[in-house]
Length: 184
Image 1: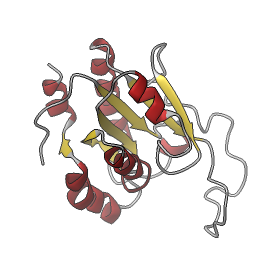
Image 2: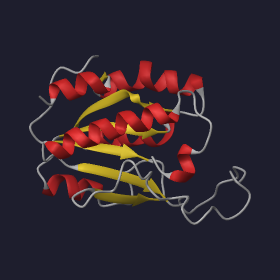
Image 3: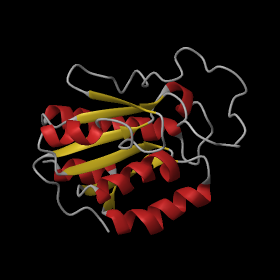
């Protein structure tokens, strides 16, 4: 479903556009995803709407037999938000240890304190951090919009499934350009 409206109190939530994640191979060029996220962030900032930059710094505690992704300690700047995105002075930075940006963080509190009723989501990976964040937002009662050209994944099939099957059930989807137009 294409985006039809944005609430007056909409926040942009950018998931895992950080050095260690954007260095991985993705289905769509990550430079384009970052550029679209930067466009959205610039417009949200100009409209004095909240910009949330989410980064992951490790895995959740508990059993996980999945092999280590990199075989050692990540570089010191692995969790740093990509420089072209920020953070800027008024941005909200959320550090997570799970797939989604809500569980185990103060994101919901930060948004509710600001009266936010809708979020636009961008980032990597479509089927993991972005989808988990969108699902929680939907369950918490936020209106959800996904910027489909500001998300990508490491796997084409899971990206397509999220964009075509999951996101339309959680809210609206559209391009960066269309979302910017809705912001006026």
